[in-house]
Image 1 (cartoon, helix red, strand yellow):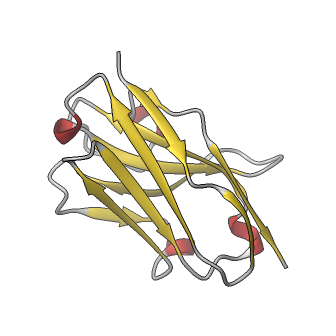
Image 2 (cartoon, helix red, strand yellow; image 1 turned 180 degrees about the vertical axis):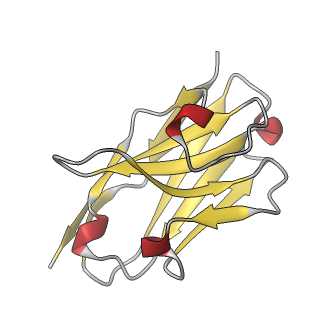
Length: 125
């Protein structure tokens, strides 16, 4: 059974940076495409970023382009989300997710087979 555990969330001020980590266990991480999603209070969960299992292709939602960077370290079975220039609207619970079946659309929640429990990011003004 694949398990995903996020960490790195916290309370920061607008303009600060955070790096989220998602550690995977129980599967062959190098075969998983990975995604980050977020959910703010009262809103639906939304796509943030994804990286293919090859590590050579990434995609971002428009609102985080140029500020967030997704990366992976297969030796550590970990995917990261570097978040810079944080804004109050970035505040949410951030979830990582894994696709083990080489699906095409990494922006869709339904693509992913496994989910973490989430980590809270709070951005104060």
